[in-house]
Length: 212
Ligand code: PRP
Image (cartoon, rainbow, N blue to C red; front, side, top):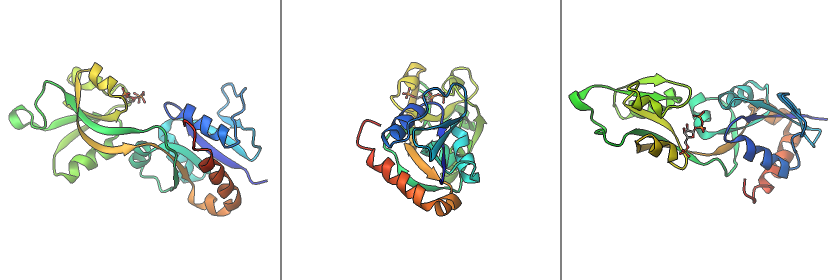
């Protein structure tokens, strides 16, 4: 039997991903506990649960055959993987935001803006392509607090409802990327396990009419 290993990201994409695979006939074993390799109701499919930023790494290397990740994480990683299917959930935007009351984009005295973000590559590319010098400060979460504490002038982060920006007095200024959940696949394993891959792809595609 050909087995496919699927990397799922912890966090906001996890529940809708699990639901989508359940509808596709591969329900995660309910009693997984803290096991990170989880069998499913389909003996040909097992899951691996990792941090969001690690999904492209596992799939590019072939440690996982497939993965579910967000466009934001995928573009930041620059991983060389196939992108066979947009999954239709997890929509959000990667934006530049800054304090509502502060001038934008010019800072007093013409100083170079400091930009806090979990996405240093995408942020640098955004400003660099427009010839706008910035200093990127990489953080790993709670990015919205950076301007409040003077760590940065601006942030580059994901926005969904906009509640987190509003709650922290920040205003969305520019959209860098629209994002959503995407299925990615290892290039070699797609060829080596073609039948199993096509079967699963078909099931995932056909199970996409519900909420997730
Ligand atoms: C994301 C993002 C924002 C928030 C935006 O964080 O970094 O903080 O969600 O959502 P909103 O516009 O609906 O308020 P997430 O919850 O994924 O956690 P993280 O800070 O660990 O990345």
